[in-house]
Length: 210
Picture 1 (cartoon, helix red, strand yellow):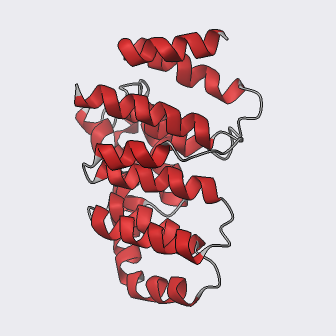
Picture 2 (cartoon, rainbow, N blue to C red; picture 1 turned 45 degrees about the horizontal axis):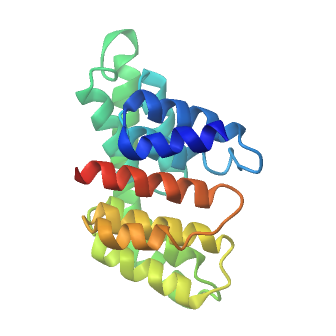
């Protein structure tokens, strides 16, 4: 009940400290698949001004690259450097290597794009299209991202259908269409954490527009 009350407060006072409280307690919520949604929690932390430590940026960038989103990883590294938390001090060279790795992975991803799209087209399910759509949106092509995730949802047999809707909302948001993003997030009904994340994205999206 306390979590619900704090979440309601967020609608009126979207303060970074309040966000930190909510996002910090979410992994402990009963039924929340914290391991599965580690990167998604970081995405909300980044969007709400809650990346405090060097390690936050390092870990998020690595998780994004591992998940197949090197463009997102590079953006995270760049933001960490802009915040003065990466690229400084004794670990500066290590941070630079991470940035270089992201650039390398982006190049590899671009080189494999046509083959990956062909494989997604030939697949029996829509999972690859969902992943490609999110990757393209992080790469700056939200329109293509929306189209691909919608193709993935239409193909069906998804491993995580509620996540597909969560990410479709995120792609709309990345493309600047917060109304469609919020409408899509409202349809997320997962019980393992996707609906919690969607609800928080709606709050963040509304706050960002104020």
